[in-house]
Length: 109
Image (cartoon, rainbow, N blue to C red; front, side, top):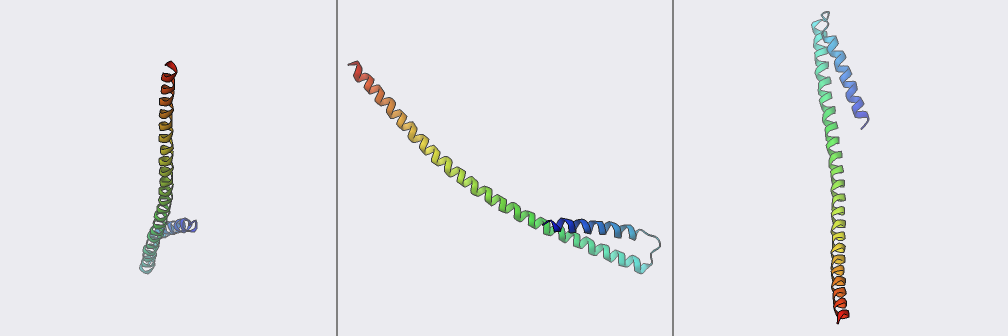
C-alpha cells in the first residue's frame, strides 16, 4: 500500500507541472490541446488512485472492526463467567453467615 500514496503524489506533481505548462501563452493550439488532454487523463488517474486507496482503507477498517467485535464478544463472555463466579461466592458467603448465626444462637442456649 506504500506504493499507492507515492503514485498519488507523483500524479499530483505531474498535474501541477502540466497545469503550469498550460498557462504558457506561447503554446500552439495543438500543444494546448495535448496538454489539456494530458491534464484530464492525469486527473482521471488521480481519482482512480484515490478510489483504490479508499477501498483499501475501508477494507482495513472492516477487518479491524471484525477483530474488535471478536475481542468484545470474548470480553463479554469472560465478564459473564466472572459474574457467575461472583454470584456463587455471594451465595456461599450468605450461607456461611447464616450458619454462623445458627451456631451463635445454638451456643447461647
